[in-house]
Length: 278
Image 1: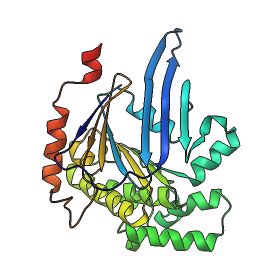
Image 2: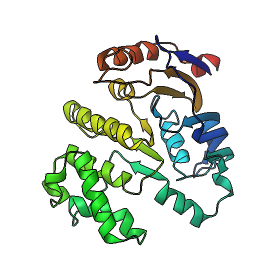
Image 3: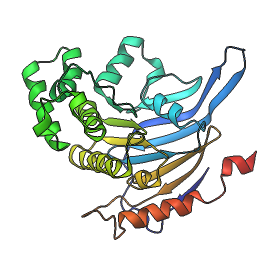
């Protein structure tokens, strides 16, 4: 893999990774007994408090990568590390605790409980974990304020738009104060304008709460929100694009969102290294 830098390299020292893949391979066996390697020897560090976008063609392995980072699946070979600890050494109960307390998940489908209000959906992870209801309710309302839905706290999912439901899902993913937020195509079911509103919420939550945020996307506009873009191709980590980490008023070290998107699009037009090497 070749690292490709943006026009302006982010200043400052790199922080210690909160999540990492070390030479990870993931192989699936089909019903016919055929083996398919979704990932092949991938190593990747996710820095604490970073915003990383993952891109790649359909079937490239990017969702498999996200599921490994979230301890939803285990690698066939290699290690997935959280704060330097090998998740492969944990039993099922310990992995469930990791997923419950350390990692928040946002999916393309909103996965809200239809009979619960927005506030109740946000507080649900605390109820499942057996945490005090009063504290969970206070945090749920704070997070609904963060995602601009405080006035819709008592509404059920059917009374909310698609974008509002996804914002509730983001608030729910943040309830347990995870150190990592994983989002798999969070704007995929939304129109462009609504998707940009959801992206703004993800950026705002990242800035205010400081968790590492990892987004899988096909959309260069979404990818350009990150500090770093990672391209997966044919199960290989093809290349990195390092964007600038500092932001102010929608700009990052002088770059507007449109300029960042154009930089990502130019970068994506380079030949895929994994394909060329085969």
